[in-house]
Length: 346
Length: 279
Image 1 (tube, helix red, strand yellow):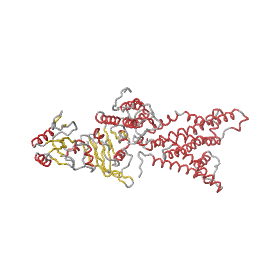
Image 2 (cartoon, chains in turn yellow, blue):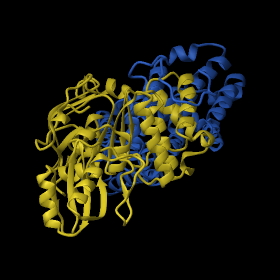
Image 3 (tube, helix red, strand yellow):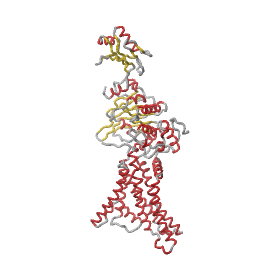
Image 4 (cartoon, chains in turn red, yellow):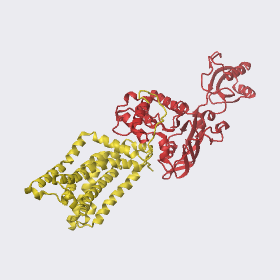
């Protein structure tokens, strides 16, 4: 989805060619608040689909979204959203995008259905259509039963849902979601993520999800842009950014650890030991999708319902060298690894 | 599409052209205010002077002994001057929360993420105040002209005082524009509508008091431009072809009113933004 990969250390698979016209293009975008650069020479291309905008607090994620919406005038650079120049056609763009702000936001004195219908009308929908869609989207986001309640009586989770409802009432082509799970309880958060995932994958709504919560992005998005200190640290498809196909295993043995490491290296595995007597072994070619890995009892036998060729190879080597395996666990690369590597926290 | 369908679906209907959102804002604001009974009571009360004047016109038209009550051009000027009290209360009641409440609820970013400009937002909000203020100034004044014609059974008075139509319109416009733009600008400066109301009242009373103090000290009323209310009164006298009440050039009075309106516009342009940047 993201055409460009900024981190040269990342695998080539991340720079796969685009499959469709990009929904957002930023070129040398720089924004300054007073003396501080909020964004500095940001160049990125967002292809259709669900893209996560990741970064620590203060990285510039919200500034990027607000600049794309035209709230903030950049000091330098150009932006195109849905093929339109942000500087030249901001209203046309806003008619086609939806925005769910990070902070609590509503229009005072309204109930949910009036509020959402009002937002629909502001986006150009005729009153009757706006009201009809307001009912529909309120049911969709799970507020159907509470749609006649005044917004000021809503809980934090309900306020997040109503913000999503107002953002989608006019059926946008592109959705900007700024920290959509902020302040939600675990159940509400899961439901919100399901909604976002459904919008992106089943309803064909392009979205850019800004978050500092890695699991949220990993669950809902296929692609990611990591922003740090106002610059793009890395970007690309999440699976490609996680690393080459293969699986890392954490291995603990009883016996000659150094000798076994040599054996592993001779067998062609990339491995190293850690401070905690754990050997990390990379077994190439094995699937890296998360799932149940081989479980091992202290006897050394595998209780696995799905054969794991990587684990089997390690066990065979251990058996050949008469080394007792005390611990074997697959370590699946996560977006957290990508994020940490990108922002230099690894 | 039936309402009972509870899923999300793509929208294939029509969309209004960009540039009409201010009408949506104005319409929603007007509907929400009309729904308040206390405000309706205030509006009815604001029309009480109209009833009194209508009775005056009726009596003067039908009873020879009361001919001295017959309306003159000055009558309409006095009427609009009296309505200034209601302009003050309506402005505070409606206007104080127009932008302040949106700022308190972070609604500006919602508005401005839709296809509308800050100018459209301001126009929509101002239209709400403008309409109700016109309803307590221009509408009853024009109504009085009509009542006079009906009770007199001729248009002779209107014909002989043809300047009254543009005078009423112009002075009402000045009253309404000054009050609505000033209030909207003050409303954009705070998140508390109560505080905005106090600021507006303070601005009006303080500037009037300052003018009266300077008048007392210097013995000259040439400082009337300091008080928006008094500058407007001076302008009203000129518009209605009456002897100006203060030693102030009408041009300076007009300039003071225009500066306040333009200044309010500048404040609004700076304050109505989708994002508040603190550096």
